[in-house]
Length: 292
Length: 292
Image (cartoon, rainbow over the protein chains, first blue to last red):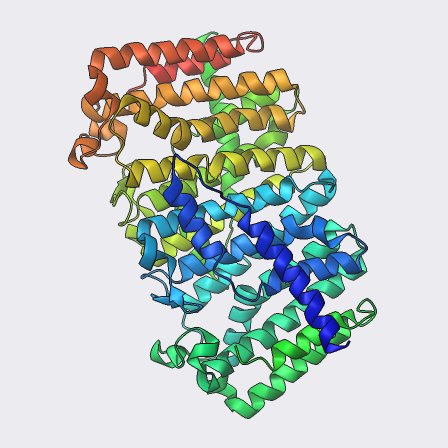
């Protein structure tokens, strides 16, 4: 797919997501600080990869992508809560996220926990009231989110990562499959499910998401070593400082590069029958070579 | 309703709930500690008032109450997460809950936050896969939970209670309407929604729940003064120790007693047309006079 065309579509999706998210948790006289804290993290930018994936998969499955915004943005709210809690002092204890002070640094620990807590039901609410989507598809989407975010998905990955100090390649792969892969795969499936796509398409979307997630995470480990702090948005070398074992430690940079390409190829292959104009392939390629 | 009949039905519901909850988060070799932490709090007893309400309202709306277990127990999981996070050092900093060490005292703060986080999607998952309930009713139930638990429901109440130090009767009423009332009203509505009951019945269930919640909370404030630690399960006088203003401070014990009775009457009146054998009326009366 031509780069200019890809960029234009990605930007249209991203702007759609920003606009949608910006309409949420608008000023409320009674508990303005809770809304402020939620908005602070929800609107703190980022590439919006997850909702963009939802929107593209929805389009490919035959739905007007705008109708899938509640699904993609719902999952993004859950992703956001996970970052807020992940940064807490008793977790990774991070002061910066995307170059800005983390939520608890601005609003305090109590509010950061509560803002994260509130983002979860808010996500399900968006999905379960999505306009022009019937109840069966809404319920299917909400279930995809619940499975991706739960005790054998994202939170399990967080437990393994934070409390079990993964050391081997197998353990590290399991952490990333759960912590990152489950939500990215969920984002892809949401688009297909919102459109009522086939079981085969759902399975392809899931495989694409898992492979993309693994490539993304290995690349993230690489950027923690070779990245530039201004572009990357968080301190370089923070993994090493925290004593975390990464794919770079286990495989070296060169083998990591190869693994990223292998996962990227597998992702592209999984959706080749559906990805007519190559947007998903190009997205996978860009993430594989990203510097931030 | 005859006391023995009431007790037998309540006990049947409660046992159904315990058995259902006991089947959740069974041993998992990969992240056993997360499951343990979730089960520790989920199975720590309590009266199970919320799911019992769901089951009775489902029965009254014409559904086999066993089919409403995923709905009632789903909401109970969210109630449980709120207790885990509520007890954290940066919130109420409690060491005891129902006479047992709080979750973070046993599993540490990091795991307590994560176990709470995982209970939310788990709740939605139960509802969205409830057997023999169609997708429309599942989605309606999940939405009721999302609204009750969210940024203008339970979490808003928690923010007001923890960070805004409510001082007036109006503020205190608002805290309890949000923090306790929204979830109890949600539990009542869930039963009606699972059965596909009418909008009128839903509204009556909601009103009953809010009035019951208010009576419950005022009674709770009273028990913090007049209760017995062994029965009550938490230290007597903890509100005063924490510098919290309660209804007892504002109204005195006698006026509190009257307010509890007023709310209890309003609750009973709201459901009088549906509560043929008086189970809901008896439940309201028992809560009004409870010592624990």
